Length: 115
Ligand SMILES: [Cu+2]
Picture 1: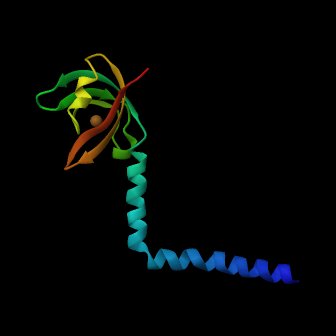
Picture 2: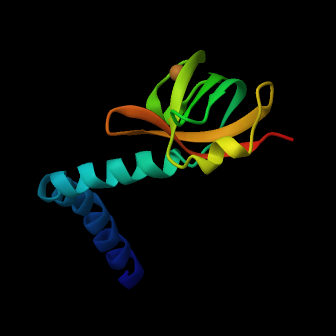
């Protein structure tokens, strides 16, 4: 009987807690969503280097789907956060990269050669 009463209490808590928190913490929940989007950016997208413009800090890539940016596969010019990224690759290289939208521009924040 005692165990049954505890179980009932646990169900009551489990049943009410999510409701209360979703109403009280709508803004906190939104923040958590942003954090999730940032961590998703760590997933690398495959690409192929088409052009490197070191002076402008840009690279043209034929890239696969960039999930964190909701971008389909395409060929496009991307900025690089750190110009040193461009020193590591040459036209024709297969790469894996992480991109984020920084100041309105799609920017590569991490890139490595694909094996
Ligand atoms: Cu694109």
